[in-house]
Length: 178
Image (cartoon, rainbow, N blue to C red; front, top):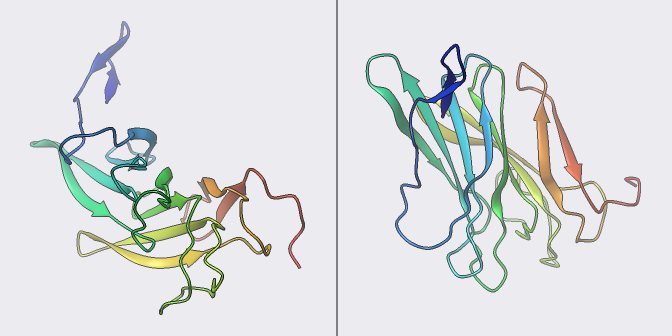
C-alpha cells in the first residue's frame, strides 16, 4: 500500500499472503474503500492450490494495517476445476460490504440463498459479505440470469456507494436474460 508523500508515492506497508507457499495469485484483484482504511485482496488460488479466498485488512491509526477477515465462498472445489473465488473483489464506500467474484463457480443448490445449479456447470457467481461484529458474514449470492455456463459471470463487480446495488459483469454473456 502506497501513500502520497508530496513528491511522489511512498510505501506505507507491504502486505503479503497470510497463506504459506505456492502461487496463490494474492493481490491479483484489490479494492480500497472511500476513506482508504479498508483493503480487500483477492487470492483466486491456482490449479494446484485450491478454490481461492479474499482477505479484508483494516488500517488502525496506532497499529497500522491488520488482517480483519478471511472470506471463503463457493463449494470449495479444488483442482482440476477450482471456482476461481477471489478473481475480483470490490468494496462499498464505507467498506462494510465486500463483493467477491468466482467466475467458475458451479455450486448446486444447497441451502440459504443458493440457486439451483443441478447440472454443476460453471456459471460463475458473486458473493456479498457484510461486516457483522468485526467478521465477514455471507449476506447474498447471485448467479447469472442466463442459463448455461462459461459466461465468466462475476469476473468484475462495481458497487453503488451504499453497497445495496452492484453491477456484475460477464465477459462471455451473449444472451439476454429470459
